[in-house]
Structure formats: C-alpha cells, structure tokens
Length: 241
Image (cartoon, rainbow, N blue to C red; front, side, top):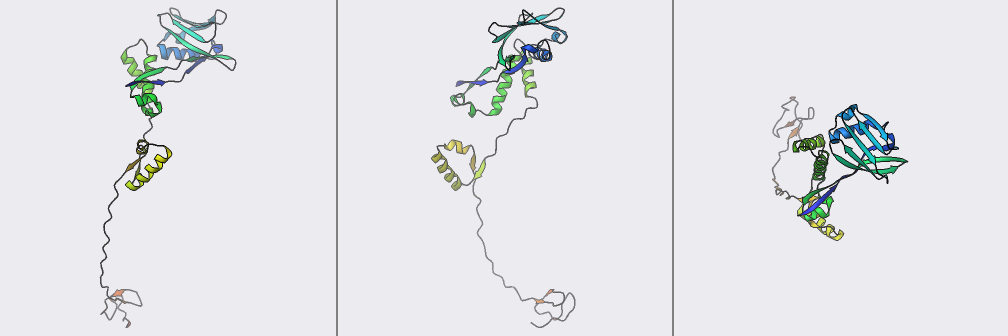
C-alpha cells in the first residue's frame, strides 16, 4: 500500500482592503461556518496598527487577524486559544486572503498513488469532502465531523460510469490488434468494451406447398374455390379461366 495525496484548491475568503467595508459579511460567514463563532454576527469590525490588524470584538469576546511584515500570511488568533493561518496574494492592487488548500492522505494501492487519474472521481470527491470537513471541524467531536461531511455531500450527483460497448469475439480481436499498435493495453480496452456471445441463428427451413389456383371474381375480386361456379360473396357468375 502507498499514500495517496488528494489536493484541494485554495478558497478565496475576502479582500484585506474591503475590511471594514463590503467584505464584512464574507468574513462573518467564514468565521461562523469554520469556527462556530456566533458572537461575530453582532460584533464590531475595525482595523488597527496602521491597517495591519483586523479586530473583531463584542462585549465579552474578541479575535484578531494580523498581516505579517512580508504581506504573505495572515494569522488568526481567537480569544479561546484557537489559531489559524491564511495566505495572502496581491491581485489587481488588492491583498486577497485565501484559505490554503489541503493535501489529504489516503492509503491506496501503488498504482493509484502514482496516478491520481486512475482513481474514480466519485472516490476523490468523497475524500475531499471528508478531509475538508475534518479540517473545518478541528477541535470538535467526531459527530460534528460526520455531520459536516453529510452537509457537504448533500445533493451532490456523482457521475456514473459509461456503459461498455458490446462487441463480438471477432470484433474484440480486431480492436485488440489496433490497441496494441497504438501502444494501449488490453486492460485499457477492457474498460471500454465487453465481449458478448453471438446469438445462434436458427437454420432456414424451406417448405414447399401446393397452392391451388383460386378463381377470382371479376366484380368483387373475392377468391373463390377452384370448383366454384358463382362467387360466394356477391353471387356473380364466375368467368371461365
């Protein structure tokens, strides 16, 4: 077995220049959802230290976000002792704050670990959701982590595997030769097609029967017995053949 790393993209949080201001609500929602801090909804948000520190305060609680000297990281400190760190990127003249993407580890086979593309995307999505939930619920109970995973996966539609194309044994052998010539393996071909048994054709049986020469009524065109004199449908005298 080998360790498989599943990377998650960084997540945009807010613009440093827009706090306090237009991004106040983004900051409040992030702190509420990721740290379960309810008091921030009725807090005061301001900047200190020449714009290098954001302070969020209420009557009894506080937290701070401090920009480092290099303007590459922001350090979060909450009054209950929790801390976290975020990355800073200069974009279009603004300091944008991001939650760093995480690399979640999963034990998988060597082949899967060397080639993430070989892992089914449904599994990758599940690992990402669980890893993200575990990170977001840091310091909370396992029940909270499981509930967070459930919330993240709710309504998510996984892609279903495409059905394999049915082929006959002869068609399969022809495709295998083409695949080998192109450098593909038999395993890759088997992921796309499946051999199905050819239906046996029943032998054709020809039965010869003698069909009598019916007498056709020239009026109603009804078929009458060869020995009939008059049409049994309209009574017309049948002409001699």
